[in-house]
Length: 394
Image (tube, rainbow, N blue to C red; front, side, top):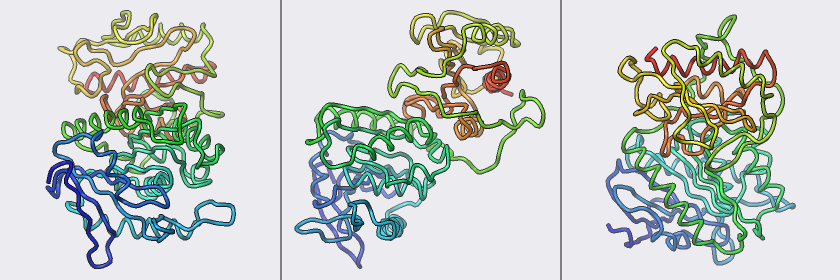
């Protein structure tokens, strides 16, 4: 079936579907979720902007009739999703997904408006079932983000698009969704906000298609990102029992795109310098001005010929760059950690996922905030030493 051939099915009570793209049962699957009051056919309009190739698409019809269209859940008197209705639809959807080809195939959700609410509920309920989420002009279920554990979506790349003139979603829900996803979810989030919101902007669809193409390329080359296994790892360079404590206070703010940098709670300059001197003295490390990054960024490098670390342990494998420190106005660091340590750092507030981790870059690439005091300097140094050990094959 070509990218422009569509058909609907309704078999044995399963959802009405519109399909296009590849039909191989193990091909990555993108599931499109429409807004309330429309149907699966409304999502076909974006097909020309989505990547072709070995990827299957299916648009699902909401299970509840609403006027001439369909919806995913009933609402409460204040217009918010009914919790029991939303939970029932999640169960219905996951039961259907069990029938949809190879159970190990990567599945990416693409939600629009109220479809974002369902996609968010699914990602939070069963993150192990999904390889990413595209959330366009909508919000997570009300209060779900405040109830979810920090780092709940670690290893789950997300594309998030909001419009400043969105007439459908309450601004407080949009703000809560944006803030939680970009600062506390643990997800690598490419977040974009435009001046529209009443109509789906072509630029947003184009950006979403580019993000999806990159994510699919990464999946084909490297497979799915492993998700947290629930075990608390030990950090070799941390004192005591090697467990990473939770970072105190709210997370710092960071930019939502590229270049990624820290914009609040920045480290004092003297602590940045003290940390740099300590890191530059690590075994086999040499320093240099960064070739990628804002002016003033300094790189930490090791000789690839003398180390056994995999390519995914590096920011720039060809140069041996495993970490770099941003200039004084910022003071944060970019580095790569083994997956388990990265997830632990994300869950405890010591790391923010890079927006393109697992999309174009190593899934363990994170931003680590600069230290605010001497106690934090010890922890940040221990985190960078773990990155150094990863690069050196330890």
